[in-house]
Image (cartoon, rainbow, N blue to C red; front, side, top):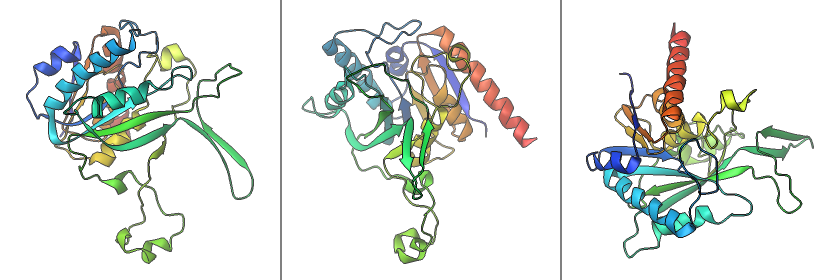
Length: 280
């Protein structure tokens, strides 16, 4: 069954209020970071308290539309001169009220670029990052993905997002492997952006995440063809493409920028064409 995709040109607060309670199984989103990013429509600058209050408002509605066993994957980045925003918002969502909205169940680190030394002493660098021209700060090569749930005890399909064992003897040595050559990947996810030639053409949104990041969230929550996924800040549709490619039942995405939604439609159309071509 094909994934139903709904792109809605609407403020997510208004849109979610029209949705039934407990109708969403999975949320993957990256809201504005309040760091002065130049979006086409949204004005990404407010005082910190106003921004946090706005986030609590849409998060409250988000909790209402989520099933009790749903997962909410919240991608947040920071700036070197403003590093505490992800943590301040997280505290507001999980600790700042008598009845917190969510429980932090896992914290994942989305690694965009990394350099590692091999056993032979070679250094391998992989991934992409935006260089910082500074004498005070180092290049920022990661962002957070906070896994939030209503109860904190939602079972995950850890090995669906896992990796093979390097030492294959571990498969028989440890009983929990059940004979499968795959282990939990852990909380560091190296998911680079695709190489691009033109940012305006290939990555026209100033703060998009790769499709692979949303796919990883779908895998670890549990990829079933019954899941209804939501992204309140659809942007150019990376979450929607992931929902389609992972075979979810349905997807809903809201955005106030009509131009971004047009791009999301085009990207989804291209993804469908590539899928049909590969199956031909």
